[in-house]
Length: 242
Image (cartoon, rainbow, N blue to C red; front, side, top):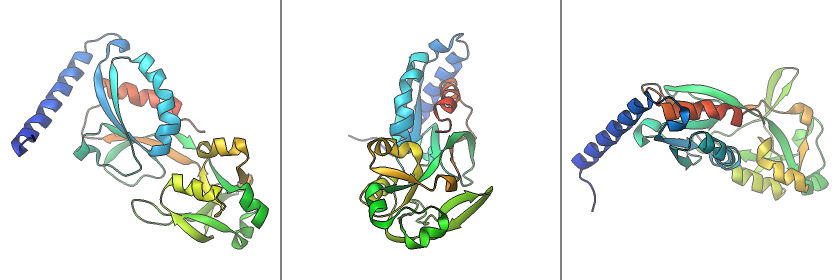
């Protein structure tokens, strides 16, 4: 069985009405532990798996009556159309008409495998990159290929590095780097385990790219419910610069 078009419209309105009732009840509760409700949150895959999900038990201990529906995906979702309350995004934001709040920054480093370094050498400066290969990264949304970036004396510089392989996900980028396909630029938290085991090594630490901003987005037409406000207030310390 499935709902008719009218049935779907009726369900959506009823769901909104229930949410408004919950928000109104929460206005008259006096302690945060009494706040109830459900929030729908969308986060990028590796940020969700490595940062947010491991920290969620602390949020649940603070607010045990708040339920979270967490979407973990690297695709750009339409918050309004898909009924999502807020989304966490990494990187520079495009103008989406959403309210954006910066939570913190992720340190990004230059990385290569121990195998690649043994075969091709270790570049010490960006000027030596012409003799090396990088694993290319293309945005899964726009298809735009990222340039190799670094900061020198406060100025952002970029260059093209030779590539054999181009991928469109962080997971594939790391796998290609481990396989010795070239150098990558990746958030440090993403490869901490590979660093510990010696599979991957940092290159040119004095020529790192800019840290990536981590932001939370929510529709500006919507008044933040108390559960959502508590969640957005909780997120910043868990997404501080890493």
